Image (cartoon, rainbow, N blue to C red; front, side):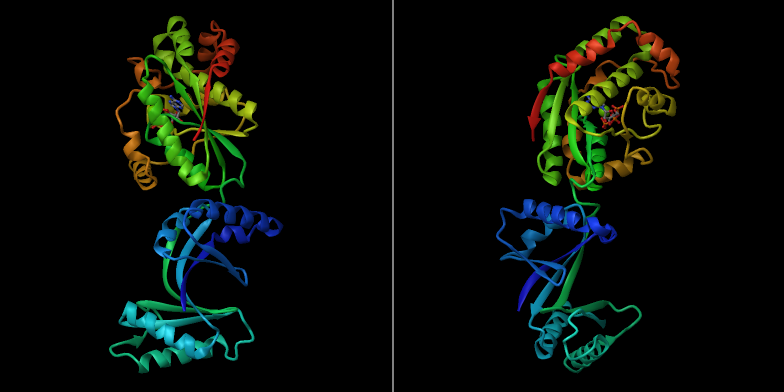
Length: 381
Ligand code: ATP
Ligand code: MG
């Protein structure tokens, strides 16, 4: 007998028809990436993926966080031989020691001499006659003993819910506007979970925002890259843009015009790098610039789809995800960002697009965008 991890991928991948092979190949590569430093072996038995290794517990946590995996199970592998299966099934029941159980068998190997009903019944009888204080409950058993007969036979010990989603790298790319806050890393994570490849842009207002604020964003990108593999972070100098707005536009319009520039730069950079979309951490109604009217004004400057995966989420729920994915503690470090230093006292909450376009028309928009991108720094994290 040996213990293995059985990897079950998201049911959505089964629906990919002719593309399924490509999704599987990517998923395999992504699994290999997260466990490359832990000795293991990937075994495929009639379409099922198993991973063996010295210490399964070390392998489970990284594997269950790979996008596209629905569930990981710990199974015991034995020869497809009834006596061996009986012995191991009894062991598992003794270890779990439930009050009620049920056996469920799946026989993919049709050469096995009994059908699945007969196997379940035989195992159930054997277990009952070798234990005490245990009964069968077919409706809601405390423990479901699953048995699968393939090339070998597998007896399930435990199943652990995995992250779900789709294999990273299968659904195009996005330019994540990554600030040092709580929301944008979560937005990036959720896009990545649907298989979308991440690049990130951070607007840095030196000297109004410190070197430490930039390091914080790099740290956040690094945490995200733990889920995705390397992420490119573009740090774009934003001070000249903000100064031009402050000097030339009305105070209550600062935020909206600044956000319009953020969108322009993100789109220009995305275009430049061959990335199809932009993602932000905005949520409807959360702050003054995230009103419907505010979003109309910033979207007006985009030339590609803009994703806001948090748009319907409450802050408390976003914070829960941030804690789960390990970005929260970094996000709450108290370094200023470029939005907090130039905040108008009474920002417009219902900006009118025509007014914004008129106000900013005194600025040399194209030149400001170009200059910012020409002077950006690139980090591979
Ligand atoms: P976050 O927690 O992500 O900072 P927030 O609630 O503070 O979001 P805003 O500051 O209004 O909201 O920013 C909205 C979105 O704009 C952010 O989620 C992020 O996608 C983008 N953004 C804001 N500031 C920056 C920045 N300095 N660099 C890059 N993107 C930014
Ligand atoms: Mg912010």
